[in-house]
Amino acid sequence: MAKINSITTMVLNLVLVLSFLLIISVAEGRYFPVFLKAKTGAPHCDSVVGVNSGDTCFSIAQMSNTTIKTFSALNPNLNCDALFIGQWVCIAGTLI
Image 1 (cartoon, rainbow, N blue to C red):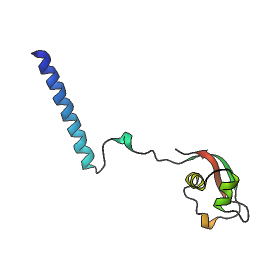
Image 2 (tube, rainbow, N blue to C red; image 1 turned 90 degrees about the vertical axis):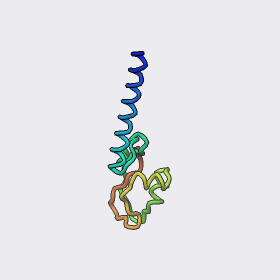
Image 3 (cartoon, rainbow, N blue to C red; image 1 turned 90 degrees about the horizontal axis):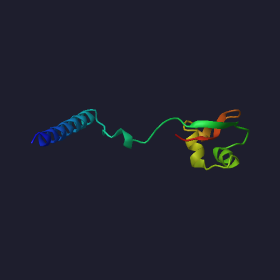
Image 4 (cartoon, rainbow, N blue to C red; image 1 turned 60 degrees about the horizontal axis):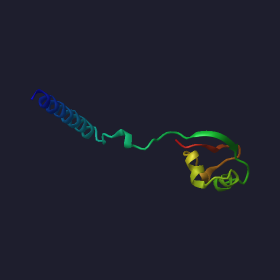
């Protein structure tokens, strides 16, 4: 009988804790399972190159044997319409 009461108490405590966490996450306007969020962070750049006259984002990506999608992800704040000579751009790295 005592064993059943301790199991019931443990399950009830677990339900109360999970309910509390759910209430807190709803109150903050976000979902509780943080482990489901995608990691967002700055990419880690391993190699850079300086922009030369006539270079475009596409030509630099092609020269570094990468896709324009990867190149853009490695350079998230780069405006490809406003490249200037001598600007450093990342051509190889790790996306986090």
